[in-house]
Length: 324
Image 1: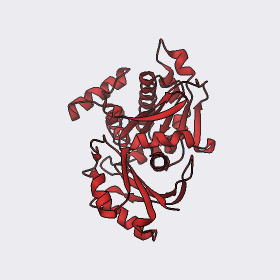
Image 2: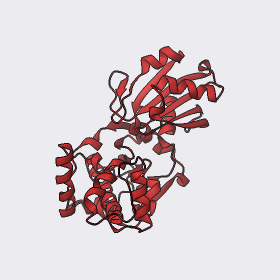
Image 3: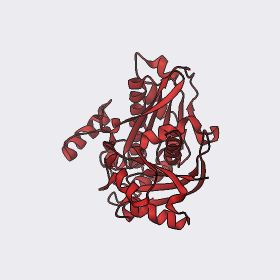
Image 4: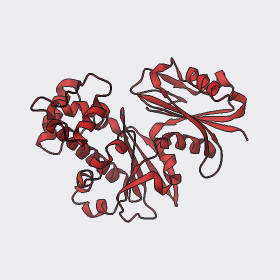
């Protein structure tokens, strides 16, 4: 059986995987995480992966690549990485019969219908409507959003660049953050708040006193350090930072749910959510999500789940390849 090659290219790391094209959920044969900028381009990374797995290009039927950015004319320039991914160059290098390119959150959306119950954590059971759409939101190096249109009971994933929409401040402390972002960047898009770098941006305004956790916000692991200090309650400023982050995340998830009328559910993916699950599950996220009068009742009925499968985007890319 010829295999599928799947890729999930993010701003920090890239996942590559080999799958058997079983239906409805392709079976993973192997996967490997790479530092995205450890390679000059995607073909070089794919070559290293195939060599590692002792797999020849002619053993692969098709490749499916999820990228963190908009896709135009079978190519994409990544939003947070100086890479351009072009399906034609990948196809020329390896002679794959097909090379498919899609937005990374659209790829993650393809995984949603085939996720196991053990691969999600329920924040709100809700009451899904059989004809309802589904929304997907995922914070990591950036903020991604996507939706699954319910067309006659069949879900059709569609991409979005909603993470770059304007940040909507809801209270005085978020107004302070908004002003800082505008001064610092010239514009405050929601990704400047709900993402790993967003945690650092919030940290700057949430610390009215010195950070007792001794975090250097210039370090690449600063977002993880801030979250850890907050969860351990080692620093009041870090606790405030994570609280603001979780509220903003919940509010934006609610905004997305309203925009796409996702009465079928909202799925929260990305690398950050599973790592801060206690903070997402303590009620702060869902209060911000539901606080949308006059639609409070609708919001309270929407199922909300955190995706625990760290390879959901990779799996979704494989699902996409198996369907096309």
